[in-house]
Image (cartoon, rainbow, N blue to C red; front, side, top):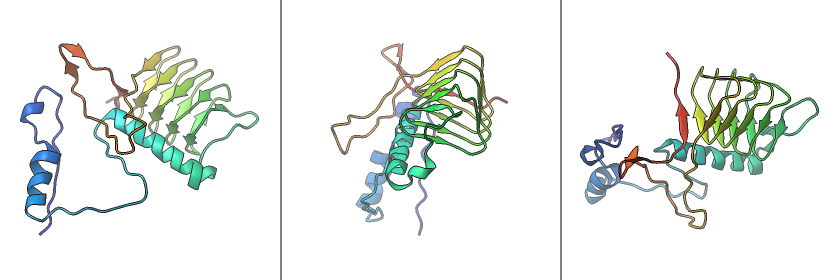
Length: 190
């Protein structure tokens, strides 16, 4: 018998009613002897939030730096300025005056204009970052456009770097009546 576990999305308001995967499901499966552990020497990161996606991307880029440095962009004449680990898909069109990094992933068919600055972000396929815009700590959705001189900035929410077993919490949208600082996500337009 195969167990299928699916965590339902929640917007923070219904958090108390949502199934808490670790406590409600995993505890029950472990009690029945139906939960198993896979031990790995490689890194592993769960992705439950935009912040954890940015963090996981950083981990993968660091891994590439060690195992496949040829996959990462480097500074070359007539190419954008690269700082730290940056992945650029070969189909992306990037102006040589752009500054990318650290920890940036650029997807298929992305267009990045003159003077654009991108840091700690994931730019998904087909996105268009117009001249002089700035994208920091964000995920830009498929086929989205960031206009000229626009600034899109999220707040980083990394786990404790001094704790090798640190995890990222899935934050609610609001805490104590205030918006919780988090990574910015620009979704796919319709």
